[in-house]
Amino acid sequence: MELTSLTIPELRQKLQSGELRSREIIDQLAARVEAVDPKLKAYLHLDADKARAAADTANTALPLGGVPIAIKDVINVEGDPCTCASKILQGYTAPYDATVITKLREAGAVLFGRTNMDEFAMGSSTENSSWGITRNPWDLDRIPGGSSGGSAAAVGGHEAFAALGTDTGGSIRQPAALCSCVGLKPTYGRISRYGMVAFASSLDQIGTFTKTTEEAALLLEIISGHDPRDNTSIDRPVPKYTASLGQGVKGLKLGVPKEYFIEGIDSEVEKAVRAAIEEYKRQGAEIVEVSLPHTQYAVAVYYIIATAECSANLARFDGVRYGKRAQNPKDILDMYGRTRAEGFGAEVKRRIILGTYVLSSGYYDAYYNRAQKVRHMIAEDFRLAFEKCDALLTPTSPTPAFKIGERTQDPLQMYLADIFTIAVNLAGICGVSIPCGFTSNKLPIGLQIIGPKWGEETMLRVAHTYEQATPWHKEKPPI
Ligand code: GLN
Image (cartoon, rainbow, N blue to C red; front, side, top):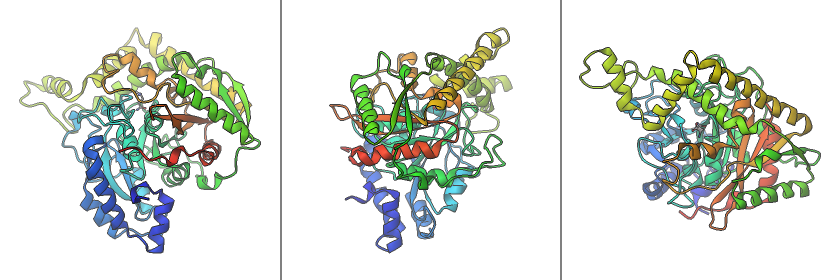
């Protein structure tokens, strides 16, 4: 087996037995990137020599000692560029490490490259990147999903062992499903966002891309926890997530929300997810039907709340403090206006305009306040559902990866890519997407497992059971 197809526990075993040195891992991974990234374009920036130097001093006794991890271009790593795939941050260098990066370093990880994304994490296909499109490792004519498409393509294409991403409405789970990886979005407040560039602060969470659930559990253990520098992070002990695996699902109740099998869902996706539900029955779980009656409003509510919050968060990119500044301004207003007009792409502008509108006086009550009320109803739906079951099973994405360019002219069609993931962010709960098979033309399908707040242990246990019973996570991409 090629080294780049190994999992983190397999790498660690070789590192600790002395069969492999961390530098060799970096060498082989960098060679793989050189070979496939001209086609995939998952990375925006990679300094392999810096990674080699870090590998040489890595302490392999630590939980991630000598293991390279790729980082979405929205999380600050001191001394590296951090552009959020936006022209407005071209040339910006991160002055400090995000808390998750500090935690990775403390665990011995080697930071390896910056991955592509939709500009400021707004999108579902990575086509909104200012630096070019990332391709799906399973079919180069198709999108990898988004917004963390670079992280998903890197892990799915075996040019990263694991990667960090962010998920505001599905940006980890949807691309993970489309690239056949495990993509985990933890409970809101589980992981510090200090040093992550904010999109919609009441929804954003950092999470992971890996080949297996065991690796997802391991990374979650390392990057979770309270941080006084992010006051939305919750002071709650971090369980040993890896210890919750391997217990099977006997005695668990798994809910299937009837609203998640809607018209418009691809028939092969539906078939694969229904087969997964059957597998859970065989494994001894009790399947119960549940209802999440406000699901149909989730996309509308999200595009009011997320745009409102982004219009406030992105106000900081004004040409004064960060990155790009327009040349030869007439006066300060001209400087602000032209910096933003030249620096932001079309989707980001669309959202800032929408968000400013829904917050403006006269419309605030009609849109923003009403959306907040419906958001509570959506969260309440989940609370009631979790009185009847331990976790929910749903498709991650209604369709497999679509063709590049297929939805760029139709924002609404693009927004529907997240129809099954968005409500999880609105409710602040946790979700994971795991490989669930392939379509007849070999495109990956994802199964989403949703847990209640702080339900990561059960959610991972449920995910691991299916993974152990199926071969999907072991399939190698054609690239
Ligand atoms: N695709 C959704 C959006 O465009 C979600 C993005 C995300 O989770 N960052 O907003």
